[in-house]
Length: 485
Ligand code: GLN
Image 1 (tube, protein in one colour):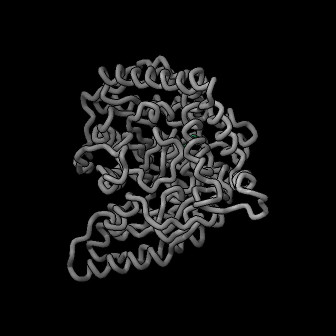
Image 2 (tube, rainbow, N blue to C red):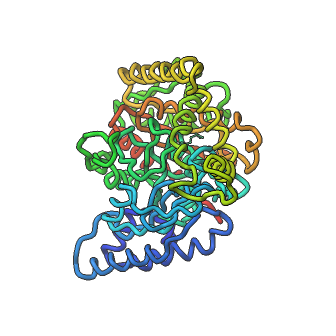
Image 3 (cartoon, rainbow, N blue to C red):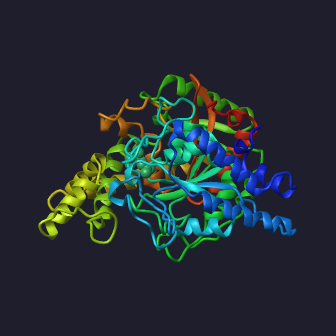
């Protein structure tokens, strides 16, 4: 198999055995980027020099007989809404098309300390608002399994890069499904950690009560290794939880005997493509054959999840995005008559249509006279949704569902109909509203396109999620399929 398609843990072993050097690995990945990028369009910025510098440093360590940590020298892609000191960070928006942050996000610092070789910054829907990466202000990213289809979103560049061999692993952010859904569409592993498990310092905020950073990887082991790097308290993020991060690889045991899985019937109902449903049912049977107990259950407030999310997320976004006014960050309109005119022209030119739509929705929902009827009501329903999960987890260790009602859709198919686009988030947003962890793992194909299986767990129970995901993976071979480019 090609070097650029191998997992981080395999590559680590090859480096330790001195069968390959980190520099050779970076070279293989950049050659791949050179040949694939025209078709895929995963990267907004490539950080070639940075990657080779890192790789050479790791090679020197290996040469001098030092032991290197698991992700040292591994080519890593970073979603372009995560700040990187001295490196362009656009959030996929014209308004930040010239923004070079003076500091790095905590997760970037941690990967740096682990010796990872950042290869570039990946494309996304503007400010992470979207489900297809088509809302990027710059270009569309294509799905490596079929380049007429979307890679999902908003972390579409990160997922496509990993699937296409343009990076070994990647970081994304997930506010309503933006790691899990592109992972599912591109046939890779993607995890949204518990709210508070990973520092968001340096993540360009979309909806702060929902945003989490998390890994995209080629298998569950790589996902666990990435979690080891990024999890844990950070005093720079006041929402980061005070908890002892663990060694997640300790949970990678091939065993789900006696584990109880609940399958919310609302997630398997009308609206889910029957072919996707059939793949999920096969996955349920597989887990049963491995000794798990799999039963249908209910999350009765599921039908309110979409309207609740599309009230709360835009409300928070309208507030978070108020800072882009041409004064401190990004572009400034030149031809303004006065300050107010400058604000208006900067924001009119700088933001794309979807971002404007959400700022208007959010501002409306928060305005005096409507606040109680919309925003406050949504917060109350959010609590009901969370309580559905609390009840389900009294009985089940994990919940199981599709990640998305369909496989990847065609580029352009939903761009004229925002509501259709929002509906594609129906299986992922509740996890964010409840703050719990969720993972997408490859579980089959429909017409040659990958299908993701979603597992959802209790707060801070990433260990159980990883164990079940690992067991499923070890007993199937979907993660070993690669797209032909
Ligand atoms: N698709 C959802 C939205 O548009 C989720 C995006 C995300 O998780 N960042 O808001």
